[in-house]
Figure 1 (cartoon, rainbow, N blue to C red):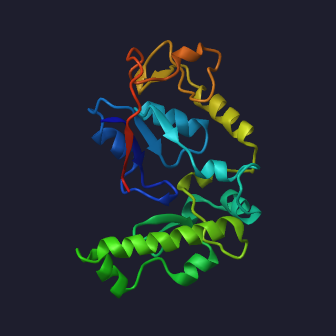
Figure 2 (figure 1 turned 180 degrees about the horizontal axis):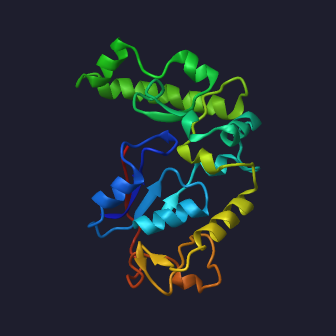
Length: 232
């Protein structure tokens, strides 16, 4: 079985999706499972909007790359802070499928799309799986180099960079999520008004911890099951 859906939208960094957060929320509204927004959640206001759309929570990546604790180069962190949403581009030259990266000089020089031969290999039923596997393996090595080598500027990031203005500690980032997500007169439970649940997933925000947002607050705990990632 499945106990939740992680919805990879078209604003997330790295291996991105092909639908907006709004479209995902609308298309999956009738599914009786908690939905997790993955993409473009960079502060508490973003998290609050996700809750208002009907998501049970969010998966956050880019925001935590620009923290003191993140084990990536200072150049990578500075690039995230300096970037805007317009600097984020899609390329299929890394893993064979669209990846969201910052458009650095290195990315621009290499081009954003594969050549005609590779494009054919990615479409052909007999070669596409092997081609994508080999490209992904090479991409993982590139991402690793980019994290630790200032000379490699192939930096994954999502469009939430618009709301990332400084490098902070993880504690400060979490506090920002707590404060921003709770700045609302109507606290929401999976997109529906509720008087007892808080949208903040990092702190009880003055309310009992047991009253955090949950799409099924009365459902007893179930054995762990696999999660599905949608939109890749």
